[in-house]
Amino acid sequence: MSIYSKIVILILVAGILASCNGHQKEVEKLKGEVLEIHDEVMPLMGKIKEEQKQLMTASGKLMAADSAANKATANEMREVAKNLGDAYEGMFVWMRQYKVDFEGMEEEQVIAYLEEQKKKVGKVNDDITNALEEAEAY
Image (cartoon, rainbow, N blue to C red; front, side):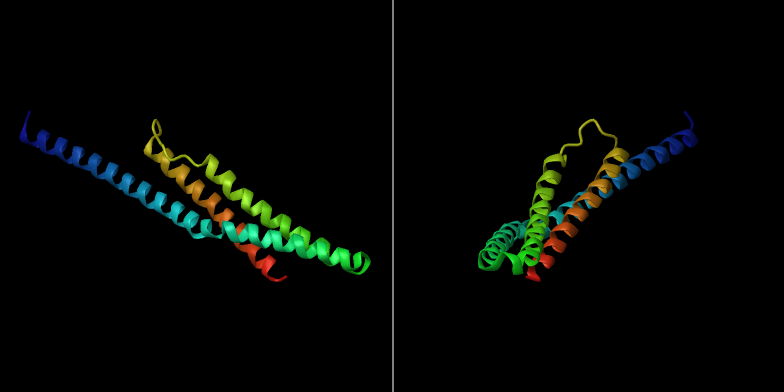
């Protein structure tokens, strides 16, 4: 084997190793971004349940006080409480389906999976944030 062949093989091996390392860095970056979004809203889960309970209690009191006059407001409050419950459940649905083990997957598949998960957890984040903003209006 000539020196030229050895240099070409060395360059190819170095390129392959650099490519693998680049993919691994991308995977780690995406995993971090997904978990960062999750960690941003996870502490709000208790607040969601608290707000939901307060809205249901308040709507019940409105209906007890004067059901005819307060029906529309009470129904709005129940709808907001439902949105809070849906947002809460959305987080747990996402967490149950999220894979932490990528065994048997090609790196490109892992990257595509994590990009999709980033979108999904971003939607969960938006749903939670929007539901809480809506609840705070009451």
